[in-house]
Every structure is written in C-alpha cells, then in structure tokens.
Image 1 (tube, one colour):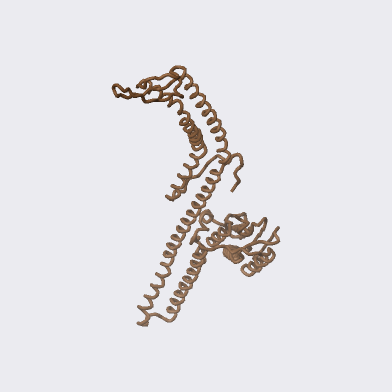
Image 2 (image 1 turned 90 degrees about the horizontal axis):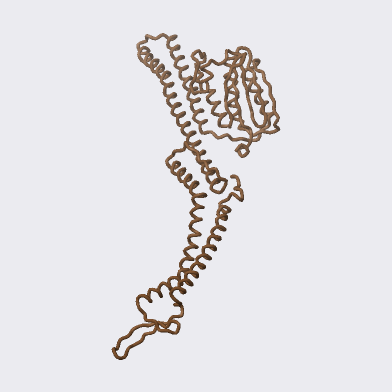
Length: 402
C-alpha cells in the first residue's frame, strides 16, 4: 500500500479544527465573562447592590408577628415579592457565567467535530458500508472510488483490491465449473457412439456365432473393429483424465538452463518429425524458472499436431527474452480454416475432414490451459506457407511475478 502523505492524513486534518475550537472557546468565554459583568453592573445601577444584603427576621412583640427584612446600605428593606424577584435576578446574573462557559466549551468541541465528520469521515464510511453490504450479498460488479489521499483512502483502496480479487476468483471458479460441465457433457456424448458400435457388434456375435453363420474371416474382422473401438476409448479416457488434472494444476517452477531446454526441444523435434524438423533458438537469459514437464507437454503436443498436417517441413522458433518464453511452431500444410482459428482451442473440436480417428480435439485445448496456468497464452494464426501456433510462458519465480 502507498504511504499516506503527512499533510493529507486524518490526524493533520483534525488538527486544523483544534485551533479554531480553541479560539472560539477563548473568545466566547471572554464575551460571556464581559457580558455578565456588564449586565451585573447595569443591574446594580438600576436596582441597587444586592451582593452585601443581609436578611434579618424581626418579630413584633405586641401582635406576636414575624416578618423578614434586608439590611441594605445600612437600611432595613422589607422582604416582599418585588424585592425577592430583584434579588433572584441578581443571583441569576451572578451565576450565569458558571453555566454558560462550560456549555459554550461543549459547543466549541461539538460543532467542529460534526463539521470534521461530515467533511472527512461521512463519505468514506458510507462508501465502505455500501461496499461491505454489496460484497456480503455477492454483488461484485462495482468499483470503490474515493479521491482524497488519507488513511480512509488507503482503506478504500484495500477494499477495492479485495473486491477485485473476489470478483476475479468468482469468475475463474464460474469459468472452471462451466468448463467442467461442458467437458462432462461432451464426455458422455462422445462415449455414446463407440459404446453403441460395441453393443451392435456384441449383439451380432451373440446372434450369429452360436449358429455357425459367421465365417472365421468375418469374425476376425468384427473382433478387429471392436478392438479398434476399445483402443479409441482407452485413448479418449486418458485424454479426459489429463484434462481433469490440468484444471487444478499449479506450476512448480524450478531453476533451469536455457541450453538444456533447447537441447530437449531439439531431441524431441527430431524424434517426432525426423528429417522434416527445422529449428532456431535464441535466449538472452542465463537461467530461467519453469515447470519443465508442463513446457515439454505443450511442446510435444504442438510438434505432433504440426506433424499431422505438414507436407514437407515443421519449423520451430524459440525465443527467450526478458523471462518470456515464446515457442512458435510452423507447418507447411493448408493452415487453419476461419472456423478452426476461432474454435480449435475449444475442447473436442475436430475438423470434419480430420483423417485421424484417434484425434479427439483436446491437444490444443490442453496446451491453452497449461499456458494460462504458467502465466502465458496460446495463439493460432495462418502464414503464407501454412499454419502457426505460438505458446508463451512466464519464466521467473512466482514471488517475482506478483
């Protein structure tokens, strides 16, 4: 996270309100003290000084009655309702400052606090509360934006990063579930045909072999066809098992020498393509970090796929620049059709004219998954001389790639 600039922090924003509160409190207290003193003096000038008055109780002996009087300026003043009101008014004025001053100090603290809350805290808190509610309801298609540079801005950015990561994980999980569902559906669909064929052959043998109506030549032919279907099913289930494992794979990158990698590429290419194979390698790295098994699985798939369509040659160009490994495989065949360029990396895609019945359309799909798991991608295109498939891999430590 970025460090919050000192003069944009909430602490310093709050400190801007403290001097204002202090100044207002001092001015208000001075005004209250001066005002009450002036009012008290005016009151005394108009009604007299009540501060030194003393109340006496005087008893009349003849009528045995009692009544109160004040001693005020060496005089006795009868205590009646009028004088009592004047005395109470003087008392209120005298003690008003002891009540007004604390109240004014509370106002000087409360009002700047409310202003600080509305200007600095209300908006980001509202944004975070709304974001928390949406995240709790699994609504992740929104953005958290707060334009100030303070601690709450850092918190909002952290929430946005969390929301983005949750949205990304949800999308990946949804995509994975959809792909698994589609794979299972395609798996069930593709198993139906060979199983139907095997069932038909089994019913044929069960019906005609006991009666001796099937010649030995016909029987061997049927058994050969059944064996071909069984072999096809074996290959198919192996491919499907590989796809299911790739969905959950995590690359195990280890230190590797480019020269050794190129040597493995050369050996594999010569083995699969023999005299058709041509290669060119370039690297500006001394060491790389890759999952060699995954890279070789992609490489073998691409070479085998190119060999199936090539007429005279299969060419490979390998470039390792700035920790990006690019493997481009060319064939001089007819290239990709418009439909193949769009769908060849989808599972179970096969060209209608595909001659190889053991080809299930999973090779490029497997390569695509592996490349993406390794931080790269798989691209298909046509050249002047045929088709081209490029696989890319990130070749550095996981800690460095984050």
